Image 1 (cartoon, rainbow, N blue to C red):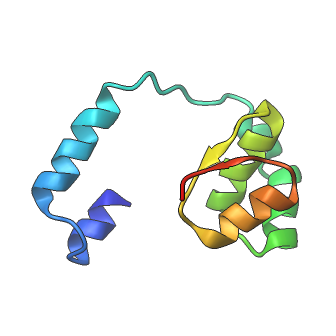
Image 2: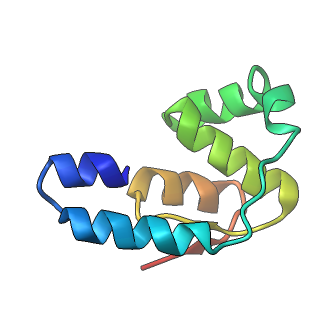
Length: 90
């Protein structure tokens, strides 16, 4: 997303590089179970809420883990609230 924002002129290259450096400092882990849910619960969330599969995977993880999601995407935020997932952001 950062690269797309840079390509569209929404952010400068320096902003992208700074953001990536900050992300490298985080303790980010991958979820080994996400693939197991891709063709059932994730696909259902995508269909029910008119989300991309990518957004639905993010929502499915928040739902399964009982954690809030951080998004500024209105459709994803609305879907999250509809299924009881808290939304961080504006």
